Image (tube, rainbow, N blue to C red; front, side, top):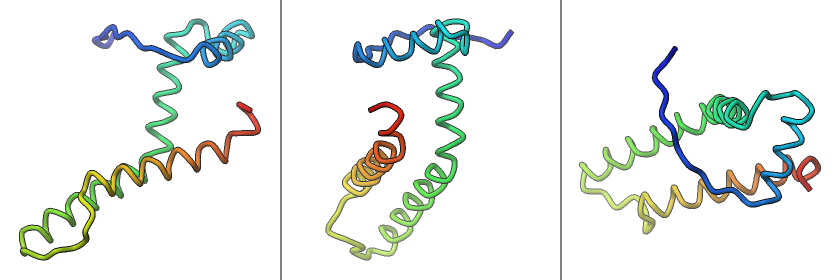
Length: 99
C-alpha cells in the first residue's frame, strides 16, 4: 500500500451534503475515496493548465534575466487572473449540475 498522509479540510455544508449523495448512491465507498478520485480527476483535467503555467513562469524568468519589462503585472497577478478565469470557466461549465 502506498504511503498515506492524513489531512483535514473545511468544506461548505452544501458541498458536504451533495457529496453524501454520491456516497449514499454507492458511487464512492466513503468520503476519502470521493476526495481522492476528485483530486485525480482535477489533476488530469488541469494537465494543460499546469504545463502552461510552467511555460509562463519560465518565460518570466527568461525575460527577467534579459532585463526586459514584460508587463506592469507581476507573476502573482497574472497567476491570480489565470486562477480566476479557471474558476469562472468551471462555474460556467458545471453550473447546471451544481446549481
